[in-house]
Length: 239
Image (tube, rainbow, N blue to C red; front, side, top):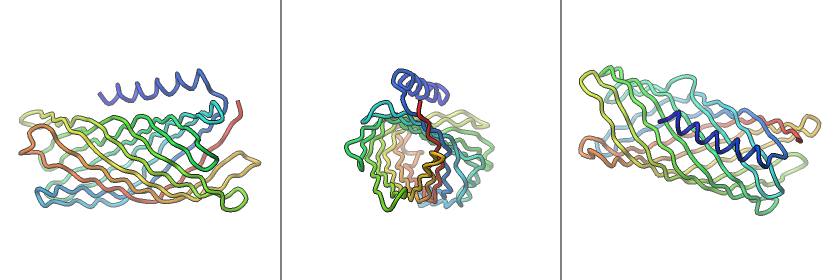
């Protein structure tokens, strides 16, 4: 299921890009973030220390107003949950967006969002995947400060649907859920004209609520909070 969703997202992006591409930007995105999971029904909170997310970003500007972007990040290392159980978790975050430039300073965007985490439960020796996909939309601002220095702000929301599967020693389980979330980031960017490179650093906050729609007596709804510093390096090309 995860590979199928990722294939669809990449296919949409590259078909669109091939039809309209005029300018290309390729970069690396990093996010050093912690993760807090709350099961308020059970009174359980797991605070997990910061680890690094990293991955590629690509964008095509195919007119003065329209562009497409694809950003995918994952955690090479694993988070460690040590609350009621002991688990190791690896997280994935993919965004595919179509962007519309309202003005020099404001951009609207909408597209597809994919969020997932795989985990190994050391307590009961089980493995699982929790993943979801669906629409996302938002607004971004680019504010010039001084020559070649900009303040970048981004606000977005998501409404996605997914499934959680777990392979246990005694039985396998599968539950559907939906998620609501919000994301915000603030970055300071510097553009190097001679190299056509943009460097940016800042802070990102993400909040996601998980609502299970099956076996709700045994599955407590979750609240996820992610926050930490970001870094971005992008190289631009004229095609």
